[in-house]
Image 1 (cartoon, one colour):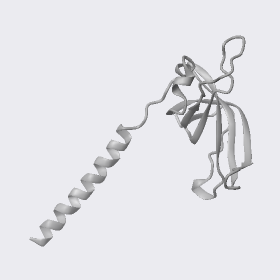
Image 2 (cartoon, helix red, strand yellow; image 1 turned 45 degrees about the vertical axis):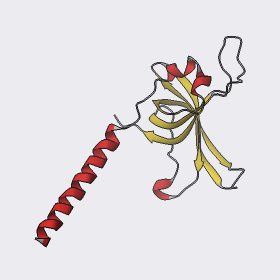
Image 3 (tube, rainbow, N blue to C red; image 1 turned 60 degrees about the vertical axis):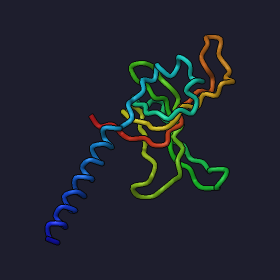
Image 4 (cartoon, rainbow, N blue to C red; image 1 turned 90 degrees about the vertical axis):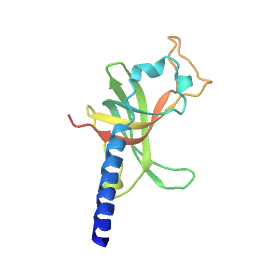
Length: 145
């Protein structure tokens, strides 16, 4: 009897883990086309989203967090997809091992998770382009196809 109870608990745990993994992949955030951000960027200010495209004009970043005085690593780059492009700031705490910042290379396809920085009081160019709109990346993942 006790043996059957352990088997049932084991099967339930494994089933729960499989369900959790499937829900996690099913609930993955959809990729937002970059072109849709430019319709009204201020309405999307600080909205968390995922973008995917080709990294261009990559410049490595190295600095210090003013609040904690911790070293920051990462890159600034332009992210292009079929619908448009946007400037991306990827500045994260420098870590060692698996937690270190992803190295972004020019021409590489990447997925970025983060938020749009587009305050409502924005300066505009003569052509109507918003100045200062950028995507602040929390994570960057290399997309392998």
